[in-house]
Length: 399
Image 1 (cartoon, rainbow, N blue to C red):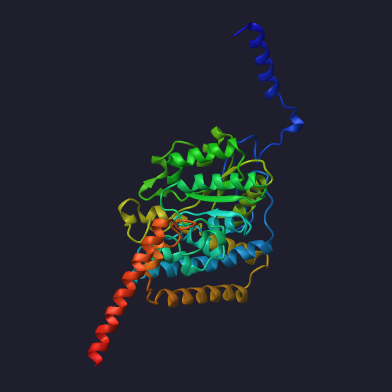
Image 2: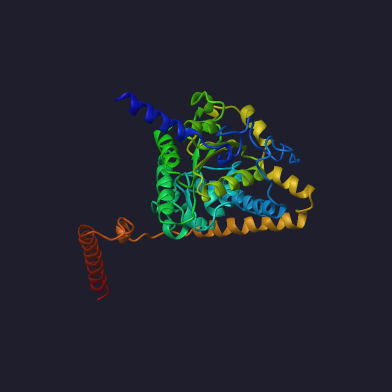
């Protein structure tokens, strides 16, 4: 390359990176780096504290009270779902007890037309989003791959493969932005999924194309039996976004006020066209990985005990009572609402399901292919032939 051309390219490159300070809008903290310690507004005893950064404004007591109501209902749902596994009504259930602030607080900050991409452990988030609890458990019951309509609810099917939904979230968010919509995609993963390649690919794509997506890592300390320290040497999973140019933050995930404040700002940031955000919520998996797991094989009760003192529900309740937003009468009404939800779920899940064989052909393609139509017709003819044969035998016996 000629010297003059090299010099011109060097000048152009230098000009491209020299942006006037007033034109640069600093992200949440300093540059892309998250706060040095998890952001929180409530200590372990439910007492109000000042966060380590002034980037966030605490939610109103009205919003916090609604979050508490949904968390109460969500925990009662979770307890009932766990009971249904013991009764044989569910094939498997991954409890999210202790992670209610993460799930409820996050989904409260998105709109109905925003997209939500959950994991298999986010049933409480789905219920809080307004999806029928029975439809939420249809997958875990084994009746269908998804019990609710993803298009109608703007909620993707619960994802069992780790981190694959993040690519979908980034793609949907980018596609909506290209079509002029101001919607945002909220995508959940666990700490174990941050070790998957899909996690890194999704962050990189979203950052390059400024896809309006908020990635939320519920760091509950365990990837089945693998503790966090066996997965990463990073000081926080939130730091994993820095290399991709993604704004990052870490939050006390058992503090509902902090979750509402930080995820709320992240959603606003993404919606305004500034790009994706990675939020790490520090929490703990109180129960086993699923009802089929024996957590005592890899952790002790002494490891769990300290987290019992950090219960997100008790923490928020203590705060709301201290500011006069919650009293015994209101708390009892929320508990009663949770009991009604659990009773309705129990009654409907105890009803036997008679799936139609023709349901095999539903939701395979947006428009059925010729082969699918032919196969469905063959099954329909077989069913009708068997029905006619049965009717003939019955008529003969009656005669």
